[in-house]
Length: 121
Length: 361
Image 1: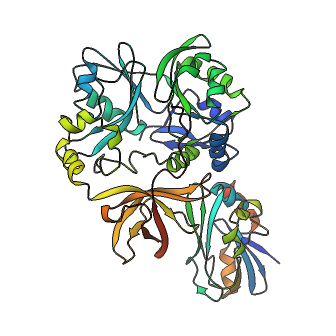
Image 2: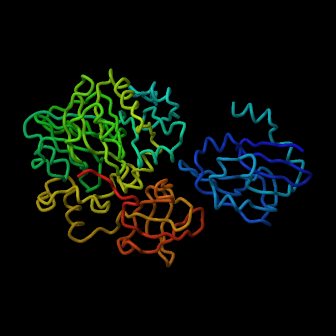
Image 3: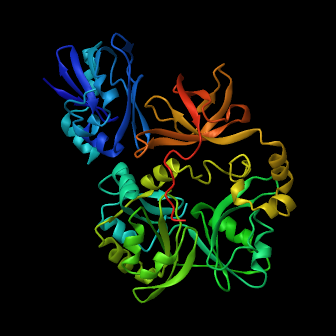
């Protein structure tokens, strides 16, 4: 299916009304070595722009925001044990959440790959 | 705002892949390609090179320099022999700290290194003394780590005779340079004051040594934090006293007994009665770093202080913080809670440093 991006440097890989969510390689590189990840729990629901987690590197803390209204189906709690994975495979194994999308129409407000590439160029 | 200034090593930083940021009005590398943690470990295990040319270098000339400087700082300089350096601070009339600095006694003058952000204030402050105050436009590099002696001695063999907090003038590749055995990482190491015109050439020659690699401000901060060393503007400032900050080791006995420095009233009173709060090491029990501004609570939920510096310690392999807490809660081993993003995170007061200092005494 389609992969969307946000201006907050998250990616959302959509399949039907569910999706996998993480941070981009660009974001992981800008953060530097990730030393701490804090995730929310499965079952929680959020509105667009709600804080849904924290990623901290040796340099700084940065928040993760809901790209659209969503429910968490599964959190990748392995990241809390091995935060370094976020640097190693940010757009693959180091996904943050499997989510259920509350309103698929909100996907239209997100960026496609070309728009995201232009953003970080 | 004026454009940030560039140190004489700027082009070398860019060539080496330095990620340049504006720090205290200077374009400085926060890290290079290997990243903060790798540079931090490089310093603890081998040797790292830091450009600290943004710091203010000042020399004092005239009569009775030591006595005059003692009117601004609570340390003894009349007893400081030529060739020795001493950590000290300027105190304000309220007993707070205006800046911290290193004072070195040379044969016929004193040499001072002050924080970049406080340079203008400090030079003006020193000019209140009846002394000639010269701002020195030279580069300053720090070579720090267990291999630092081998790296520096490859070009200046006589530095092996220096011990911790000793300083002298050396010939380095045909140029007169002041080399001091001290630093801001907790490791053995040297700071070298170089002529600007030769700064890149000399730095490149050091970097040819296989044990040495460049490190940026990011590693400098995590190294000093693990070593329990204060950062001016974070852990100490105009409101914190040297007693609160546990820096009274820098106040020699005679000065503690006799006073005669700005803010002596508060500082001597706190020495006698104990301060209301103390700067302590705080070790979070979990993995979440507790950064500057995080509140500290006792087990009953009362706010007893806050974090002044905090982050992740790559050698400590966990989060490390420093902060002020009420004296009643300052004993090592005391359990506290850190309020991070609205949640309690358990932590323990520890005796600084987090990583043992490794100086050559």
